[in-house]
Amino acid sequence: MGGTASGAKRREFAYGRSFFVQRLLLFSALAAVILGILGLQFATPPEWLAGFGVIFAVYILIWGLSPLFTNHWLTTTRLILRQGWYFSGRFLLRDIESVAKFEGHVPLGLRAPLGRHRLYVTGSQVGLVTVKLREPRRFVAVLGASADEIVFDVDSQDAFLEAFGVRKGSLAPVQTKRSDTYLRD
Image 1 (tube, helix red, strand yellow):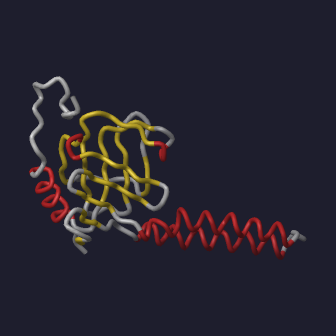
Image 2 (image 1 turned 60 degrees about the vertical axis):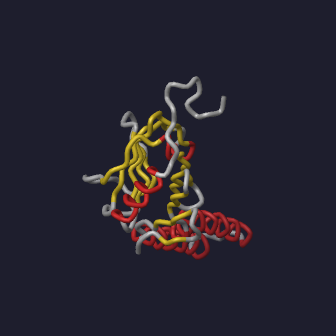
Image 3 (image 1 turned 30 degrees about the vertical axis):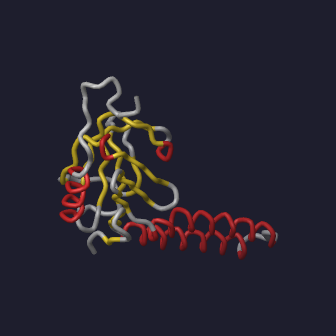
C-alpha cells in the first residue's frame, strides 16, 4: 500500500503491522493466563480480578491495538512519525538534513540504544528509511533519549522518498545570511 492521499496537504504512509499483531496476541494471551490463574488457583476477590482486567485491557489497547490504527504523515511542511498513541514525532522539513534508504538490521518497536543518537520507530525490517536531523532532539517516549537520526519503516519506501523530495523541493529557500534563518525577525 503506497501513500494515501487524504487531501492535498497531507499524505499518509502505512508501516509494518506484523510485529504489532504478534505483540497484541502475546499480550492478550498473557493477560488471559494471569487472570485465569488468579481466578482459578487463588481465592482472588472479584473486585481485584476486575481491577486487573481493566489494567490489562488499557495496556493492550494502548500498546497492542493503537499501533494498528496509525500511519506516518507527510504534510507540506512537516514529517510526522507516529507509532500508536504513545509516540508522535513532529519534524519540520527544513530541520531535516537528509533522507535515504536504510540498509541493515534494526530492532523492532520504539527503541533508542544508549550512546547511539539513533531512534528506531519500526514495525518491520523492510522499507526502512533514515532521517538525519540538523540538530539532535530529545524524545520523552524513550525516557528523554537524544537522537539526531531516526530510522522508521514505510510500506512503500520509493513512494515516500519521492513524495518527500517533492515536498522538500517545494519549500521556499531560506536565506542563511540573515540574522534569523527562520524568517521571524
